[in-house]
Length: 307
Image (cartoon, rainbow, N blue to C red; front, side):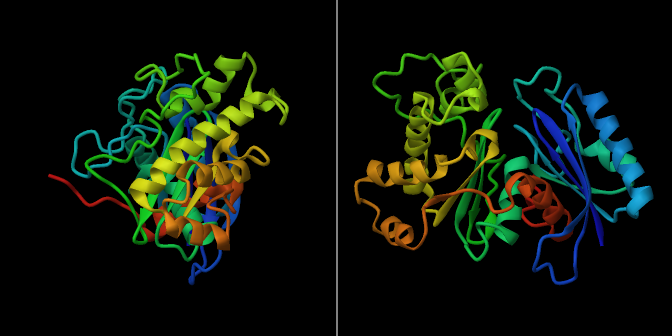
């Protein structure tokens, strides 16, 4: 079965065709992969459709379509805005219909979810969450978001969890007001890639590993993850994204989470004795794309209609 998969991010759209095997025990074979910048909706969505149609003519017409999209997005089936981006700060994308035009262009009914839920689905099926019933995938990059798997299923509420927009306690010596246009110093406003750039005057990828920015970043991630551990009790947190996959960051955050909780959660100490609590994604940069394919093939995590 050939599947069209799209990781629709705020910075770039990753497009792919994947061939899934019958058993699904290993990740689908990527027949085609291309990345384009996220500009404005009509241009980006139209170009994505054209690229995937051309790839389908070359590799075989896809039979299913999975989309993991940056958000916030509307996931309630039957809602007039299903498949749309909602209250995003990204210019031009507020209210943009993503699933509708792409599905129509490819002649397929899209399976639509958040980009982080797609990545969680991929890592749960084939990566660092494999065999776990309870884990969280967190991406730290242009923004911060998370996909929660509880009891082996993706968590959806009335909308979808927004793990990047609660307010962690600020570090005592941090006078930065925060980057988030909605909340200022929420988790995303303090620890996302743009927050790092605004705080230090240089992009994270340009800062050496010894720069104090990384110790501050690890501290904020640890505070957030300690809260997630108390509220959601995951066996593992998978840390992805352009910032999150910085060498050594997951290991440092894992240590700091333990220090933050001071031995209060016994199950966490037991889990950490077997493997680090915070780990990097096994599927790496393909977690979201392969996860979108998993959503399309299995419908994994697709929310039930809400009236």
